[in-house]
Each structure stands twice: as structure tokens, then as C-alpha cells.
Amino acid sequence: MAYVVKQEQAVVALAAVDAAAANDSHIGGAPAARPRRRPLAWTPARAGVYAFLIVAALFFLLPLYVMLVTSVKPMEEIRLGTLFALPVKATLEPWAQAWRSACTGLECEGIRGGFWNSVAIVVPSTVLSIAIGAVNGYALSFWRPRGAGVLFAILMMGAFIPAQVMVYPLVRVLASVNLFSTLPGIVLIHTIFGMPVMTLLFRNYYAALPLELFKAARIDGGGFWRIFLQLMLPMSTPVIVVAVIMQVTGIWNDFLLGLVFAGSEHLPMTVQLNNIINTTTGERLYNVNMAATILTSLVPLALYFISGRWFVRGIASGAVKG
Image (tube, rainbow, N blue to C red):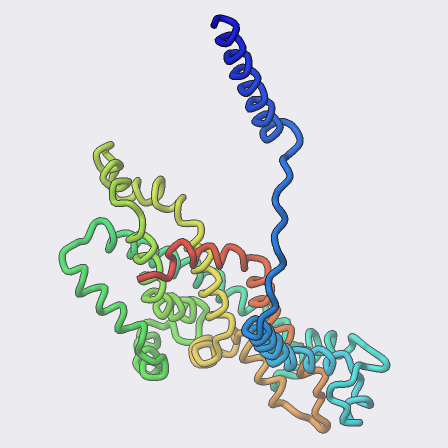
């Protein structure tokens, strides 16, 4: 009987040793072989989805391809009418001409002046609109002052009113305070127009955060600005990235507000591009026009390529939920 008991104990010990060895092989040793995944079945539905995606990609990439090809062709090849053909003798002269010597009206200094004007407009407008929107969203989500619902409804109404409706009143207001056709004036206009959307964005993001975090900070003695700067703002990286992409893209691509409020000395890149395309002295230089168009769109494209992952992460974390 004792022999049988000892034998059973030995079997249990050996099983424990084998289990420990298997555990070690998973943790510190060679990884265990994973079961092979079966290849996805190629069904008609899957084939239809891929066909649709390929056609959609070609549909959106075809204009970009035509612009790129045309921008590096000399005018002799463009006159042949071979729109989709690759250039025989590629040249970057149209790009250089669009940047530094294309005519934007009476001046022929290229589109580089509009680029720096757009930078001077976009940077402060983006920072101010995001800062104000973040504070508004934080206050409406956690502090809820008296009349917060009415204030939020007014802000949302402002987000859906077309800019064309408010152009004339804003012109009169800015002219009365000597800000019309100035850089601070156009920055103020973009900040005002961006504030409702930014408030909605941050309010929805902060509303998805646990209320217990705010209550714990209040118990620890945190005030309005301390909780916002030390607790809420460090957790707002995903939504800030989304807000930056939205504001930079919207302000950079704006034409109407820049044309009306920026003045002749601060015209953004989009207005300069329109002037290049519509200013003709003889033959229309399509390669220069295409190069100027691509140069104008490089900043939003680069922003999406660099921070696209953060943009998706911000959307998935609740930045646009509500």
C-alpha cells in the first residue's frame, strides 16, 4: 500500500515538473508554436469588396496622378494632349517657377509669400481655437455652470451657420475696431469660427472620461485650472491631435475668409494659388499651375501621413462620439 502511495506521489511530481517546464518554455524559453491560421476563404462577397476598394482608390488617385505627371512635363509634351502619359523629359522647372517666380497678379514672386502668410495665420489660429475649445469642453463637462446647456446650444448653432451669412457683419465689426485686413483680424476670425466645433469635440471627449477622476481631484483640493492643466490636459493627447488635424486642414484650405479678411499683405496660399491660375499673360502654363496646386496641398497631406495613426486613435477613443 505504501508503495502504491509513493508511486502516485512520484507521478504527481513528474506532472508538476512537466507543467513547470512547459510554462518556462512559454515565458522565458522558446515560444510555443502557434497554430497556423487558415487562409481566408475567397468568396464572391470578399472579391466584391476588394474590387470596390480598388476602384475607389483609383478614382481618388487618378487626379493626383494627372497633377503630378503634368507638373513635371515641359509645355511641348503637354501640347501633344497625352494627359495620362509619363513625361519623356521630366523637369522640375515648373515647381521652381511656381515657388519663386509665378505671377500672382501684379507681382511675380511665386507662391512662397502665400505659404508663409498661411503659416502665420494657421499657427496662432489653431492654438487659440483649440485652447478655448478645450477649456469650454472641460467646463461644460465637469463644472456645468448656470446656463451651460443654453451656452452649448448657442455654440452649436454657430457651428452650422454658413460663413457667407456672417461675412458682412464681421467686416463691419472688424472695421470698427481697426482689425479689418490685418493679421490679428484674420486670426481672430478663424478662432471664432473654429471655437464651436472644438468645444463640441472636447466636450464629447471629456464626457467619456470617468467622473470619479474629477471628484477625486476635487477632494484633494484641486481647483478649476489645476485640475484642467495637471489632470485633464495630459489625458487629452488623442483628441488634441484630432483637433490639430481638423483645424490646420480647415484653416489652410480656407479661401473665402482669407480673401475677405486677410488683406493684400497677408493673403494665404489658397488665394495666391487662385491668382496664379487666373493670371495669364499669353500661354497658360498648365505645368506651373499643377505644381502650385500640389505645393499648396502638401501641408495637409503631410499632416495626415505623419499623424494619421493618432487621428484614428483619437476617433476610436471617443473624440467624435456624442
